Amino acid sequence: MPDRLLARLPLPALLAAIFAASATGAVLAVLLTPPGGRGALVMITGALLLASPVAVREWVAIRLQPAPVAQDVRTPAEVLVPGAVHDRTVAPGPSRRLAVVRPGSEAVGQLRSVRGRLRSSTAEDAAAYVRHLTAAGSIDPVHDQCARRRALQTSLELVPLSSVVAIAMLAGSVWVAVAVGLVAVLAWLVLRRFRVSVPVSRVEEAPPAGYSAFTEIGCVGGNLAEESIFAGAAAVGIAGEKRTAELLETWLDEVSRVAIFHSLRFPGSSRADIDHIALIGHRLFVIDSKAWRGGVYRQNTADSVVTEGGEVRTSSMPAAAALLSAAGWGDVQVLTVIHATSGAIEVSGAGDGGHKIVSPVDLIRLLMEERDRRGSMPWTPEDAERFEANVTRLRRMLVRPRGDRATSVAPRAA
Image 1 (cartoon, rainbow, N blue to C red):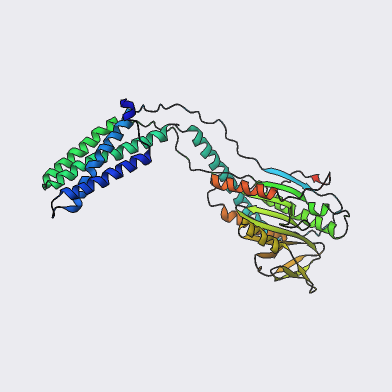
Image 2 (cartoon, helix red, strand yellow):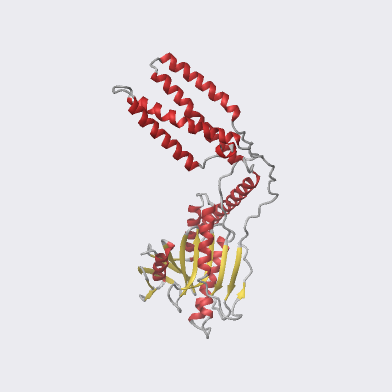
């Protein structure tokens, strides 16, 4: 029977009981005090007096509970960091040779510098992830529970001790109040001996950290591989998509928080397609690969480009970006990268409506700088979970050529 009477109250019930007792005590103190008394102090004292029995009862209930027994937990011998996913294939069929355009040494040096920072950031992501999982596996399993019990005991002790001090202050003597306050502090120090002991944690608690490995999935040129005849524009298109895929893998391979997808279905369409999508952190980039004759290309509107000869070429990718944004992807950036079939490519225009035409070098620089900019923010388990959910969503949009119409590609060395 005593065990049932002194069973611990759930925290919400305990807080409700203390609040009800305090409110009742304050009201009774006001009703029983003659007019002109010390109103605020009387209310506080009455509230503390009626709350004290509840606090003492809960303190005793906590004390009567058996203390948890700490057990040794072995530190994990090894924490495996998720490895990169390489599932890229290439559509078969003829592919025209593209012009070999070598960027200047200064541009290459800048890209290598950013790539070095990205690899350092990836190493930091992995180290934080290992520290977090190691700490989670090594910490005393009852440490947090005991710490919460001790903190609650401390709070409960302050209620009756504060009521004693408040009564002394109502007596009107400063010295009496000081003396009672000293006695209350001494009593609080004595009560510390009766608190539940807290086992010392064997490791410091590491901040939560997540990890998202580099991922590359899809069939390069897979949309064009569905065509029955590989010739003309299809062959050129596959060449452009292959060049883009090689650049993305060369510069972003093994970088955390990055996922690359090739050949995706256009939202809401059975025929239109998206060449590539890059997921950098939580931001989406729709990439359209073009293989055009060398020359100067100028962005005309949000969905059109003007060639050197004055021809206007339109793009459906801004419409795809708008549909993706409406589906919850947020701000989606469209990048049209132009590869030269001959000569060299020059682009002009600052971009319009979230659509930019870029050279191959500018494409890589923009994506790498986006990852570099986001790399300073810690990657939490929630971030990693959201990233994986986005990867799963994009997997469902992939186009896979029927039958054996794709050739696996081994990872390239950067």
